[in-house]
Length: 446
Image: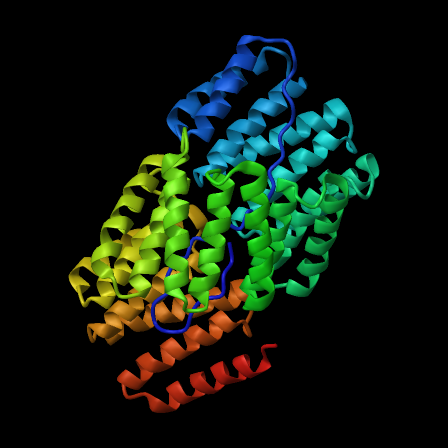
């Protein structure tokens, strides 16, 4: 999830439910077997957030499917579902070979142009997208789209799903002009095929709204978020988890516009829905706690924000594991809270842990790693430890330039942060050069 970062030394991790990628699955065979039972129970465990139970069940399903033969499509289904579980937990290295094997089985058993091959291509691409391996994801998404257009027809909902996924990839790279027509075409397909009030139309509206939100086109995003919310409330009921997602996103929009009083009740309602839901997803509940804490923190209500961050952290560690990137996000924001209050001794261990998680889970050159480096440098700068701050900012700047391009707005933000540090170190000529470069980047933005 790529989001333009705010100005200032510290970077918060904001949780927006983009609903960006649609991961595909295949229907199970009708005959009830041990394999069927393991698959059904495993999927239910995943939905309930019981990932340890789910892993055991889905591994058993894979073992059962191995007995059907190496080219049986049921084995591809089980490999796909186990890979999906690992991806949810941020265990990308474990997920990738499973998705690749599932793809190979389907290509051999069904042929290269079968819709189930498109599903596997889509899921492997989604895995690469999650790791920001965009160059590897794009050709897979495009091939999946081509297969679906040929097999299903240009106006089929599966084509809309592929369009959505390719658009999400372009949005993540800041290629907004390429993303927008794909999102619009996906929305038109779904409205024609399913009707204007279908929940899938709400998801498509949400995705187009996120694109505008990311571009700070708030006036265009708001009515789309509101229409998506209305559809979900009518079609699914006021207490459905997807309603909570819409409430979360509309609240995030208001927060981005510095309207915390409008955001807070929406975050509260989203949290209440997720806590009330039967078999509630702990990760979703944690996201709501995290977001409500952000809203309180933005209003200076630190005593109310802190316990919510701590609850969110505990839930994420339980649901996702201690080394998941979402755990790092909550650690980061709790650290920001302490930093704002001048509680520097409590900040550093949280930032160091967040950085370690991100480096391990996402790779040393990921933009979220740059965010952690930036925040740790801000702490050292506030403490007067300038010599410790500078190498962190240098590394963060190099990461952002490589990942986002030398003229990205987030690079400008980091240039300003580095210039501020240099000014503290009485290196004004160097600082002035960085500020001039940051200004040029901003002037060039649309």
